[in-house]
Amino acid sequence: MSILLPLYIYPNAGAWDPLYAAAKAHRNVDFTVIINPCSGPCLDSLPDQVYLDEIPKLRAYPNIRALGYVATHYTEKDIESVLAEIDIYAKWPKVTNNTKMRVDGIFLDETPSTYSAEEYSYLKRAGQAVKNGTSFKDRFVAHNPGLISSRILNSKAIYQESYLNLTDITVVFEETFDKWLDKDTFDPLHSHKMPRSKLAIILHSLPHLSRQVLDFVIEQVEETADWIFLTDVKGDDKYYHSFSSIFADMVKTVDGKRRRRKQ
Image (cartoon, rainbow, N blue to C red; front, side):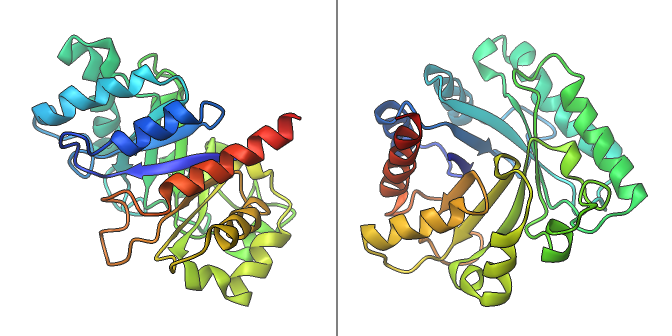
């Protein structure tokens, strides 16, 4: 398993230290973090100096990959605006004269979940801007529709009925812990035949769990996806703006699973 971390935390002094500490202590764990300075890359300027000082520090950790955040508004945003935002991230190293400002790919948020040829073409253009560019180290593309229906996930024609062949990973479920537990969600997510390596699950608003129960939750998520993020933070627009009390234990459990796989 790997960690997909929406790092929407303003990088005041020490604010990202839990990530650095986890990456240093758990070198077997891969972290893909999403940086989002201005609900995107900051259109009319570079990010402020606090971000310019902090983003290069991510490069000190070989197990941290950084993605730039771009919202598509379910393809309602003009594609040229999306391409322009991708290009801004691509130019960060040159504009700042700092190669450590380089990001490794793009996280496309608010992508559609139901298929249409027009939306496929839109998302393909966005993905090609990442895949064909030389500025993105890994040329990594992630989509977040927030939910992909069980009908699509379990379809024999899934690659013809979705956008999964355009991505390195897709967030197939981003919701509250309670909704994930619902039988109509839980059972279909565990029955799909997709490669787990291409799928991510993000759960927020977790209750106060014991370490044993948290480990069990992570085991159940692993039945669906190889990418995970869990937080017990509650409240709209606050889930990803602080490190939760379970962050360190989540990383420890993921590390333990990776170590057991290698044995």
